[in-house]
Image (cartoon, rainbow, N blue to C red):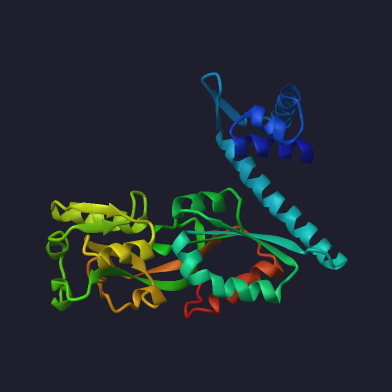
Amino acid sequence: MEWQKLIGFYNIVKLGSFTKASEAIFRTQPALSLQIKSLENELGCKLFERIGKREIKLTLAGEKLFQYCVKMLDQEKQLMEELNRIKGSIVAHLRIAAPFFSLYYLLLPPLEVFKKQFPNIEITILDRPAHSIIKMIREGDIEFGFSIASIVPKDLAIFPWEEIESLLILPKGHPLTKKKNIDIKDIISYPLILPPMGFVARKKLEEKFIEEGVNYRIVMESSNIDLTINYVKKGFGIGFVIASKKIPILNQKEIEIKNINHIIPRDIIAIIARKDKVLTSYEKDFLNLVQNFNKFSKKR
């Protein structure tokens, strides 16, 4: 199989159309179509199914070939980076993605250390929600992602990193601060400040509300813990987050924190990667360095 044909096929899948792929690899669309037809003839099977005039879908054979292409591109990347290491230039590019919480409150210290220890590794850092991170890992767009472990599919590798808890943020002196065993009915008795739709914490809490068959009142959506705390302080409602209890922002005199791990169990922020990925030496260095900032170190 010619490498150019595989690159063309890979870009069609990534970009979702022959037109976009032909632009990306500087080929005319007819030339790219001929390449794919030649590849299909060589392999003896169809790679795409056409749905309507424009939409395309991978066949089972196409899915297998795409997985092969991702691995081959990984190996090419690793080779080029090792050659760069020999030449003494910028050795490699490391791409990671994490939600805002991890980037803002937890990741900066280990990333600073890594940057100082490995100045020839260029890091690209992306702020993305968990579902996007999982998709990017699967498609080879990033080397590592950070996500709540309980939502990561079994086909991805998990490296446990930071323990997180289910926390209510209450104004100082709130009635719930004195209650030992808070239940769902206690929580819905007050106006709620919750993360936006699609956030893991929001989904987990609302699932509990649905299980109990209760009504609840959301007065504010907040994707930022600092913002939630400011509105809790002013009496707008009580907040709910899934977070590490050790972050400094939670240690304020005007608020009190109560865990509800008995309702929504503790979880872990995990570093995730593809299970079939062969880690380069610098990727192993990154993984070890980040994990050494925390007490968890086992891979699922």
